[in-house]
Length: 208
Picture (cartoon, rainbow, N blue to C red):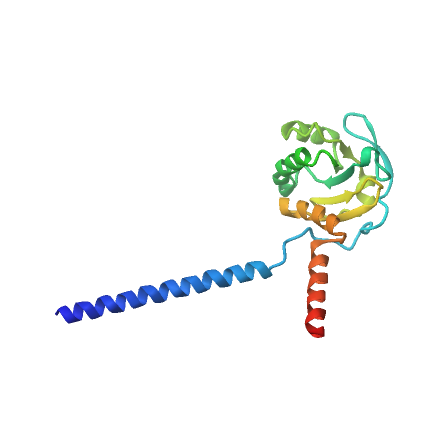
């Protein structure tokens, strides 16, 4: 009886240790996969002005009647994030807190401009409900056509000289942040950066 109990306990410990070993291996493999997965960036669409090109220059009045130049050189070495949205776009609404946070954090070098089209009253109500008064808000079909915006939300990062540094469809805060990172790395998108990095790695392996 005692021998049977010892054997059963021994088998139980073997099973427990084996389970722990399997779990450790799975955790390690997940970590490896996480390192290999490329960071999600904004989806770059084929339409509209390309990265590296001059942004279309338009003189527009915002909802408050103030005149702004969208595109071209900007004073005080500030970049602009042109964010296309709609009051009927659920994803756009979920990104508004992120835009406010980014505006506060990056205010030394970045201005955020909101753009849409449609009925003025609807957008004025939208601005009040979501407290967007701090952002210049444009109602301009011409602006959307100039950037060939077909899907929302869409963002364009324009530097202080009026050159487009990054652009794409943004569905999360990470996508918006990826526009800044792509600009810093001097590439059109994080996808392009990862492709270049993988190509370099392959070339180095071939040389070795």
